[in-house]
Image 1 (cartoon, one colour):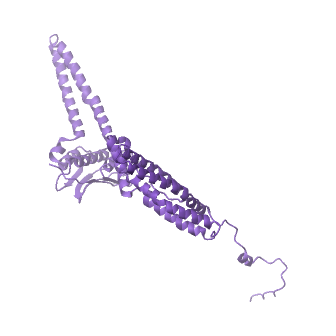
Image 2: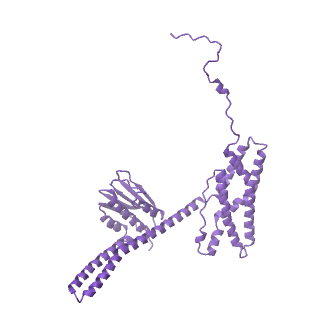
Image 3: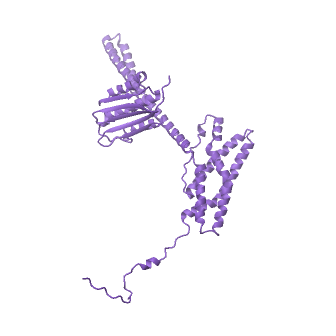
Length: 402
C-alpha cells in the first residue's frame, strides 16, 4: 500500500520551483535590425550616388566615343572608356561582396600587353564583352538607384517595422543584377582560364624537355665526341712514332664512337622513337614493354592511327608509367590496354604491385596529369595500399592528317 498524500496547506515560500513562471518570462531584448539587414540598407542607400556616377560615366563614354568615331581619337577614347568600365565593375563587385555577400568571380584580364600591335590591342579592347556589360549595368542603374534610395530613406521614418522585408526584396534584385551583368561569362571565362593555364604548362614542359635534351647531349654524346677527338689527335701524333700504340688508340676511339652512337639513338628515341613514326602505337608500346623489368601484356585496339601529337603523348605517358612500374611497384605482372571510345583515346595501365601511388608521390604522376590536362585530357590514379594499381588516361581523339 502507498502512504496517503498529505493535505495541501498554505504555501510557506519554501516549495520547489514548478517552472510556471518561465511561461510568463519575457525574451531578452535584441535589436530590431541585425547586422545583415543594416548592410543591405547601407548598400541600398549608396545606390543613388554610385548610380549617378556610373550613369554619367557610361553616358560620357558612349556619347563622346560615338560622336568622335569618325576622328582619329574617337575609337581610342571609347577603348579607354571600356577599360575604365572594367575597373568600375570591379569596384561594384567588391561593394556587393562586402555588403550583400555576393561572391562573383573576377573576369579574366584582357591580354592587352601581349597583343601583336596597336590596332590589335585597340580592337581587343573595343570588343571586350565585360566592359560593354558594365556600361549597360551603369546605364540602367540610375532609376533603380533613385527608387531604392527614396524607399529606404522614407521607410526609416515611416515604415520602419517592414523595412527589413523591403530591404531584403530590393537587395535580392540587386544581387540578381550583379550576377547577371557583372559576373563573367561562366563557360567562356572558364575556358579562357583553362587555356591560359594549359598554355603555361605546355611552355614549361617544352622548356624542361629542351633542358633535358641539352643536359643529355652535354653529359653524354658530346663528352664522348670530345674524348674521341682528343684520342684521334693523339693517335695521329703517334702514328709514325709508335704505330702499335696509335692502332690501340684508334681501336679505343672506335669503341667511343659506338657508345656515342648508342647514346644518340637513345636520345632520339626519347624525343620521338622511329618505331612510333613508322609502325604506330602497337609496335612502339610493345617495344617499351619489352624493356620493362616486369612482364607486360600490351593490347591495342584502334581503328586507325590518331594525330601525331596525340599519338606521341600517349606513347610517352605509357612509357613513363611502365618505368614507374619497373622502379617502384614491386609488381609481378602488368598490362597495357589502349582503345578508342567515341572521340576519346583511352589508355589503361595496370599492375599487381604494392600500390600506394599518388599524384604527389614524387614519381612523375603530377607531371603526367599536367601534360594530359594541357590537351583536354584526364588522368586518374586508383592505387590503394597493397594494390593493385590502375592508371587511366584519356586523350581527345583527332584524326591523323595525310
